[in-house]
Amino acid sequence: MVAAPVDQVRTLYRTLLVFAAVSLFILVAGLVEFAYFEPPGQHTGLKATIVGVYQYDPDHKTTAGPDRNSFPRTFQFAAVVDWSSLPKNVVVDARWYDGFGNVVGSVGPGTPDQLAGQTIVPVKVPPGFSHNLPGHYVFVVERYEGGAPVEVIGRRVVLVER
Image (cartoon, rainbow, N blue to C red; front, side):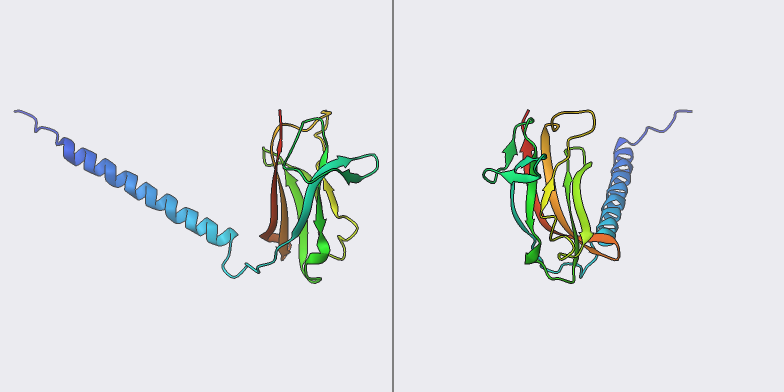
């Protein structure tokens, strides 16, 4: 008795259907995740005023020089935020993220009045290092609601050169 030949087209078609089903599952999971972390109606249109990113003097806790988008590794830097540009009843915070997604500097959360004395948000050099790691650093100002960040209201990207 001779075995029936294997239909290669049918095998390829079934494989294609499996990939399509997996793709649809990934798409639906992504949409559900997006809806969970970015719920509709959370956008307020607020914009935080990031005055700039400047060279930072940790000894005097001051900034100096012009607003810059890149720094050498040997320079410390900080963002300056104008909290008075936001409504008094909103809760916000500001954070620096390094290229690995680690928080390397922050203030808040609090109302703009509570953060008025913390307009300078420096990047902290990692423990055990004397300079910042090279890569892109992202400064983000977020609006909080219910104890969790719900909206990015300001963002700035800075490059630390090798």
